Each structure stands twice: as structure tokens, then as C-alpha cells.
Length: 192
Image 1 (cartoon, one colour):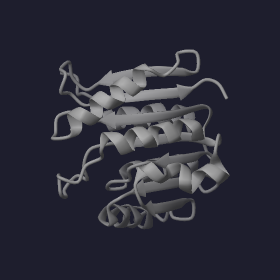
Image 2 (cartoon, rainbow, N blue to C red):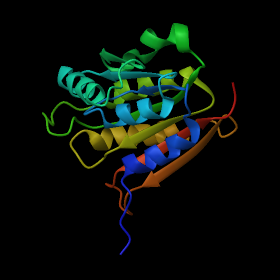
Image 3 (spheres, rainbow, N blue to C red):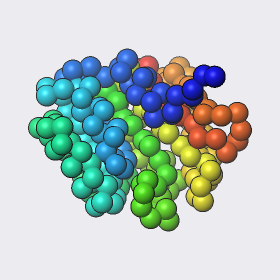
Image 4 (cartoon, rainbow, N blue to C red):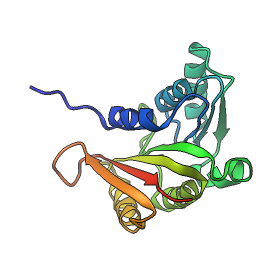
């Protein structure tokens, strides 16, 4: 029996193709810090990683994870919503970011009523698109199977579909063959 690869692992496999030493990356929802650590390892000490989360607990968990692996000099965490990506990064990093990861939903092991929201996520995605370097990618892990997740996933699906095919290469990976299954959206910027 073949074991399914998690969407997060699939996102990591895709990201490894685009994120090299010295790269610039964003974890738009740091959560427990697994993705932040992964991308920090990919860019190495000469790269830069920025992480965002509205929950102080997520920032602390991520910082502790980075500290435990001695990866701190190439990371900067912001205790704020991903809706502020452009505010914090736009001036210095517009058009220079190689990878932006979104892992949506709620912080595992915490209050499940605190979730990412469709409106703020769409705003953050529109900002993220403008910050990407040519050939840069955005990965979005979306989870329709929890309260509020359906609305957010539907909004992302509609946003993803409307992106111009001559400017972006688009792909969707489903974790299972059902409408409530988590999915991974991948967007690669083809033009300046």
C-alpha cells in the first residue's frame, strides 16, 4: 500500500526546486514553525526568511524551534497578520522574493476558533503576487474541512482560477478525491 505524502511535504518538495542558498522566502503563517525552519534551512545563512503570524504563541513556538537548531541569523518574525506582508516587506523586497508559503487554517494544538480568514488571506495573496521575483512561487495549503475553512478555500479557488495563464503557471494538488479534502495551490510567476 502506498503511503500518501502530506500536502506540507509536497509543498516542501516543490519549494526545494525553486529556493536555493541565498534566496528570500516568506512563511505567511508560521504556526508551529515547521515550514519556517524548512525554508530557513533551504536559504542557508546567506538567505533571508520572514515569518508572519497573528498569534504570539505561534511566534514563540517558531522562535523556539529556530533557536533549537541554531538558525536565527537569517530569520525575522513579525507578530502580525499576513495582511501586512507588503507593509513590512514591499519597500525593500518587492519583486525579489523567491518563495511565499501559506499554510492556512488554525494553529495545531491551540484554539481552533482562531483561524485564517478569506478576506485577509485574499488581500495577502494579492500582495504576495506583487512581491514575487520572476519564476518565484507561492504555495497555499488550504483546508476546507473545518468551520470557516470552506469559505476560505472557495475564495482561494476562485482567486487562483482568475490568474492570467500567460503570467502565472498554476497547479492544484488534492490530498484525496473529495470536495472537503485539503488541497495545495501552487502559483509560479512567469513574467515581471
